[in-house]
Length: 350
Image (cartoon, rainbow, N blue to C red; front, top):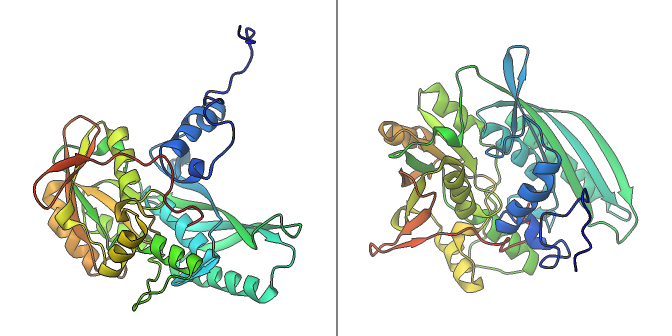
């Protein structure tokens, strides 16, 4: 017999199946999308909510701004190629850039654990400021809280960012069309493998460094050169697989990825094979996917390859009509569906 009474609020996620929050609920996969889509989004419903972007597009004084927020809980907080401070700037700037915005201002909220070494904090803060200067943004406001020893993990950082969207820019999954080309700006899986190598003390002959970087200059270059950019998505939690599935679902079209075109470094691929990871589902922090009109694909790749963090740009797939599926065409010509993972292969990577 049910205990339900009329008017009673009922949690939309089956509590009997997931009575507790799991690490997978923050991993960029199916469970995270379920958490957002069934609890947060309908509860905080607004006409301005835009699930297709990591930044909201807001009207202001006849123009538009992009507004985003993010939190960073990476472990370890200092890793090859960066630290939690530089990562916080890069991640926030990139969320704005994927909406076609020029990033302008950031906030920074710090949650510090009692006992944190002050030299470590100084290293993080200095890296954050250097990354902001390089990206051309200003950190203009912030907040600091300290929690008891053992109740945190050194440093957690929350950011918010504001950017200005040019009048003639319209980037959205709704603009994705059959025949569009899918382009990435470089090799995949490096950030996640750099984090796990540092976390577990795994050594290779060559050091794997994170690809963490601000990418708005690449987006600006595409737009300034007249590339017909239909949609953008940074390849963070869940990697290429989650990003393509999100866009296929939002656009109502299918995306086919060519395995032979995927750029994965040999050392990253070897580490993924050793640990049982799929590089297509490993997080990146300096990689994005651009969906552009087919006639502009070759030019877009050429532009990206001439810029820092775009040297490895390559077209990896195409959009086809209907279906909302993501498929991988293997080197042997066979095709298989690429489904979004339930959670994250590697927790605490951003």
